[in-house]
Length: 128
Ligand SMILES: [Zn+2]
Image (cartoon, rainbow, N blue to C red; front, side):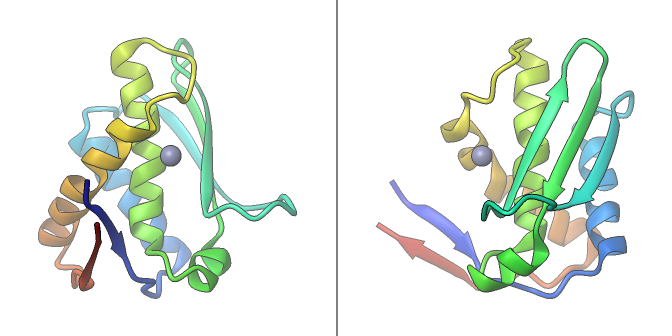
């Protein structure tokens, strides 16, 4: 299985929020109330999500500095976290247990995001 990684690219907080709004619109999740926050814990994570599929509330944390350190694309990270909400919502599951599905969808959504928003797509690095 090929794992596609995207290199870090600069992202402002406004761009990250725009990216999230774009994804919620494309995924038909306009009813969701989602807050996006800077990572505030000491543990090192690119991002993570907390959500409630009954109230349609979500909280997404993203650590842009850590994305830079790990050479990960912050747009891909935010799309990844939103996909966790999307799959949980569609499958009516309260748990984040769908990592393979999210990883499979992430490059497709990211490519669409780049095309629709004229964001330069970073070089794709494949690992086998
Ligand atoms: Zn994940």
